[in-house]
Length: 217
Image 1 (cartoon, rainbow, N blue to C red):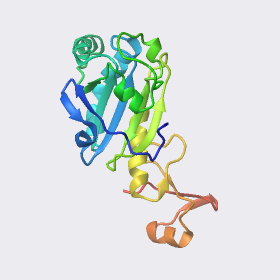
Image 2 (cartoon, rainbow, N blue to C red; image 1 turned 90 degrees about the vertical axis):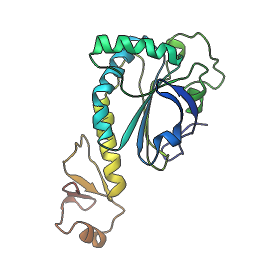
Image 3 (cartoon, rainbow, N blue to C red; image 1 turned 45 degrees about the vertical axis):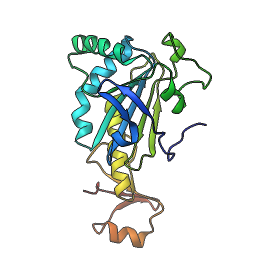
Image 4 (tube, one colour; image 1 turned 60 degrees about the vertical axis):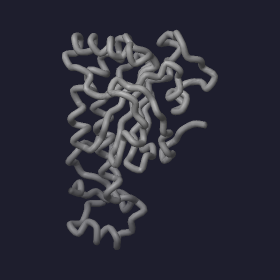
């Protein structure tokens, strides 16, 4: 069954480069980013893992843990990590799940359920290029899937997390290309009477359904 926004993120137990974890327990009461890779020692993923290592402190500052996944064994991850550090200038500083039997990939509907483990090529696993944003309630808040030829934009994942965390606390939505600190939009479901209580400073409304206010703090 396909996973959708609002579904519970499937729990799993797996070996990682930081030891064996149970996913929901590992998340704890915070947020999590799970991002997957089709194979170790692949060029685009090498750049992604290095860049995510640079951003890890930004996610931690938002009470969000980072977990990578690749369908190769943990021992391969450890060898790959040396390449990543040497070529990207940053050591991988978050756990990487080993998924050689494709158990997690199948659980998260990233690959055909009849796919088999064992030796495979990156092309066989092309669909395992996903990002899942998971909330403290262990529910999926957002998903992104990229082709193998396109490196993922982890600055966008961070921006997405900012938006989701903000809108989880306040009855607002974020407009196109929004960044932290910029104006937001009052939800259409909030009537004006309630909006006046929530936003006593008022708002500007180029249309009745488009009520723009400064970002709540």
